[in-house]
Length: 165
Image 1 (tube, rainbow, N blue to C red):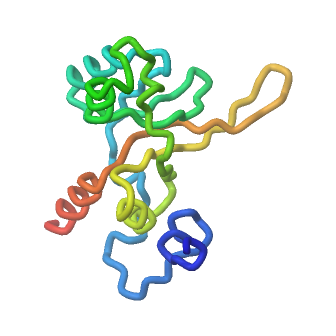
Image 2 (image 1 turned 180 degrees about the vertical axis):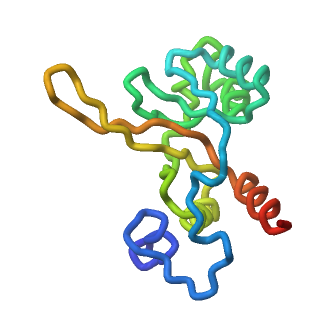
């Protein structure tokens, strides 16, 4: 079960990884990946428009984020197309109908080792950064901002480029 699975415990922040033979990159922070700014879709974007935007911009996937900053999930080109072709969604439906709402988040300050554990089970992780926002009446709250989407290919590219140096 999950509660005795060390990788699940590390991925969810309940256990620090104590791997003895860590690779050189294990403790480097996610922010060192120098990810490009993500393409973000708003929830009211139609499936057709999402397909058009993803193809035009050359992306396979994009986070769906509400105006409030709430991360609703991830939309992929393949899932959108297959959902429409299978009749489970219409081109005119909002993209939220085909959005994956199960996804992993990782912070800019987290280690590449933690990211590696996440990517063993997930195809991607959404990189977030918490930001404090204050209003005019003095109240404040924390908001998560999407900084990027990271895949195993991003990690592999970073490791291979830096190992050659």
